Length: 117
Length: 116
Image (cartoon, rainbow over all chains, first blue to last red):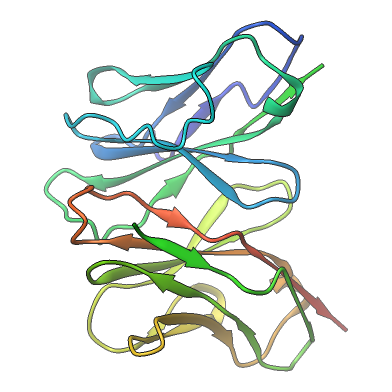
């Protein structure tokens, strides 16, 4: 597609349930990022995938959070046993078309608004 | 480790006046620097970037930013603010020598409010 696509756009879930958030990056982009934005807050880095390298998971807040990127394209962020403090907008971004360096900007999706009730 | 600081949570300016949104950074090597804007209920949009060359870079919607290596700053500026510029602005940095690939680190954001 033309841009980064995230689904669902909104998700309401009960505390304790698992959720999966999906990100379709721009075709050919080798880098993929997940960030979390709580109401009125800045961007909290969660995880970063770069090509075939091991992902940088240093931002994941707990072991309830995990992410994978299959075939170097689509990524899924999974939150297990959701808690109310997990409520936020989860943003995905991609950058770096194949053959490019680190000087390219990241393009963001519209985000998934997660509400845990 | 790389980091970005946006010292002002909010900046208020009158329409027609110049605006500045401040950003300072810390990296081990040389930085690639970016500004993004987020309008209410919208995703982040890229405004401009500094990679190399001229310290003054120009971007979308009449915005520009000045890279100052000695002060490790990359302040966002616009000569004449518009009410429609009111939004949340994020500065971001990528350290090209960390060996960590293309990891992009964001500041906490600055809310810009332009009033008539």
